[in-house]
Length: 474
Ligand SMILES: [Zn+2]
Ligand SMILES: [Zn+2]
Image (cartoon, rainbow, N blue to C red; front, side, top):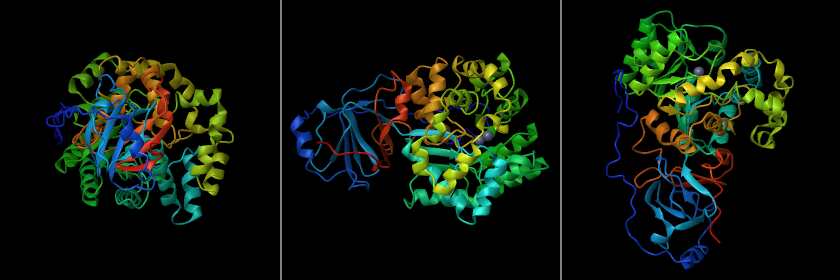
């Protein structure tokens, strides 16, 4: 449920109740049970919701608690039915066992700020006309590629904040029916702004000229079936309030695109649910302490999108080879790959990065003002923006937060449980515990030791279906 337009917003208002992790049934699992399971059909063959057991690895369940070592997760259909230590559970013989030994299991990651219509191309002013020139269907192809990239990177839920309405809903719905692979998508469709032209035109946003129009546009988007609203920059205090009120009437949350102190404060005070980009430097010094205190006291979630310029750019200076990651060539069509590569040929000169040197001056303070103050942080990346590929944006964002001093276990909670809270979906998503939807990833390594283990997603289970990896036990 939404907290409505009330300024105090509690992301965890949905309590765990009967959904506590259960350690019942202290029954011994013999190694022989695992061996017997090897005779079962492979998880890849059984890629439909069935009975699935993920057995052997370390489990991080999404709470900021210690891991469960040598754990087992039982999944029946699309939901988790049992979680605990493998040695204390019996795996019924009709479960397909996926051996996760030596790996880490955790909830599927939640990307709170992505762009399916972007694939890392260097220049919006060239990218969208290029798509249009390719003819109908290319925009949809781009969105499908992006959605699949996210899912294969371990993102099982994502928010898209700015794309044409029809294509947005179409891609979301085809993912939901299983027609195409992708995360569970929450789509904003077009964003709402007072700043017409430029990016708003390129992304298909809606430029309004009055508060009443802003509210009316929210009504139209809600009627069309969007999941969230994006309030882009340039809006007035009254606009924010009208947008929030209109959205909340429909149980829809509003994500604000805010950098400047005044915009952040207006969005906070007028009831906007999520403050996106705040803290990602811009060219400004950190916010005033009073504003941070007010954000913390309100419990309002912030999605910094820290990495996408101020870290991705210097990382690319150090390792420009990342732009030719072979995975990109595999994921993109040859024509799209060629166009993206062309656009990045002289990436140092891209307009998108022309203020990044100044952003880098403030990047650490920009993030630490939130990580050190107890702000509710979700994880979002602006994935798809120049050189910020869907294949890796979220682990890069996670790494920045860890490098800025946030404990890895807190970052993992931000990626999972807090993400679900920001979506308002804690009943179904964000943790690995009985009753939740079985969105679980298996990564190679220990992300508590090295958060970039999140770059090595071997298995993805979404709604009980193995959609990546999942070799059966031997
Ligand atoms: Zn934005
Ligand atoms: Zn964005």
